[in-house]
Length: 371
Image (cartoon, rainbow, N blue to C red):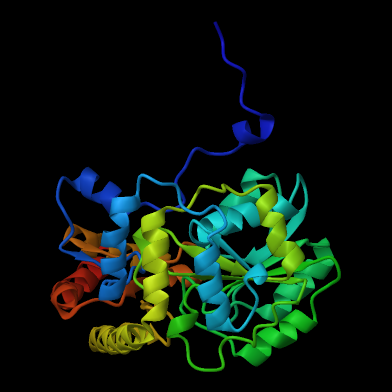
């Protein structure tokens, strides 16, 4: 007996995981990390009200979640001052990006992003046969003008930009993003990933115009709300674009426990404000630790700080490897010139202490290994 072959497109793709998780590295090393500083998770966690809501919902986990996520959409609509018809709930931004690419991209369709930007979006584009075109970063920022120019040249159907950016943590003002939206070519949709927007300064997000047909905004409960493991994200867009998700999404992809937690987390804005303050203090400490060791912290509007090693990717990899050897999990950008940096997530004092202790020796080891 024989099975049918994979499609030619599937056969052409590598069977790879876009991110090597800390658990994978722990299994390979045979030991646990002492500090988990590389996944941009929010260690301060969800609101106690959200935790209580999730515990209470566990008794009802025998039921499927509402496939329309009606109550959470209503809550978000009130929060943003828009209609529930402008909101789609999904299993994190990653899943929503996959659905969006499936809706708009077929074989050989052009898609524009930045070289070194969030790789999961690229993974989805490849999975549906799209042609990815990348513009370089400029001064560690994504370049809105270059993205627009490249979209015009390639007749792109989608442009992806994250504001604030991952992996650098840099950001553009809402005015710059509004100008980018106004300059979009016809028949082109802007995918505006705002996963880190809660950490950003006022004025970073352009005003929400949910009726705008050529913009889809992505937001999440994974970062500021501390619910990365629950997988709750949402898209904001024009009614027709949002309704189109119903053509192909997993209607039972959400679970009742996660949705209950998201509703309670959204309602507790006082706790969110406290988390944002703690993240800001943690980022300031990371910057001080870096500067004391000759690394250059890049100003960040996310929940992590990107640290410039001042050399090249080989030096950054050597620092990262030395930290991992000491049990400190960090990550780094993967495309030059951003790969001259390592990236450290905001964390509690107890986990930043071992990072502070290990960093001087890691840098010294890196210098020895590449000279």
